[in-house]
Length: 123
Image 1 (tube, rainbow, N blue to C red):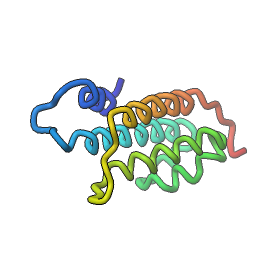
Image 2 (image 1 turned 45 degrees about the vertical axis):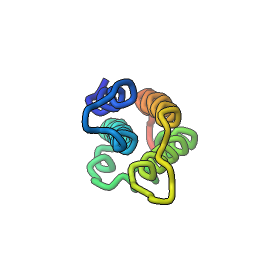
Image 3 (image 1 turned 120 degrees about the vertical axis):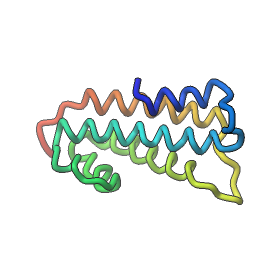
């Protein structure tokens, strides 16, 4: 388990002093960092030149060609949802613990599928 995921789990399962009110956004950012790390591991293995790009958007846009539509769709949704949750919107409520747990579970599935994806080249 990575440090990002372990820290997010700590925020989800215990009271962290000084994190009252900010822990849902912090947790969302940690989960997004874990997703980005999983994408980086995938690209390092499959196409290092794509993995060398710092921005995440191009990596997500290239994902269907190398990992398949389903994984790309799920990863794209996760990145969008976690990015949105990480930003403060005065007119919206933050994510609940249930929503964060669901996103965490989806993240684990996507990361595992990225790890298992065997790719010979663009599809």
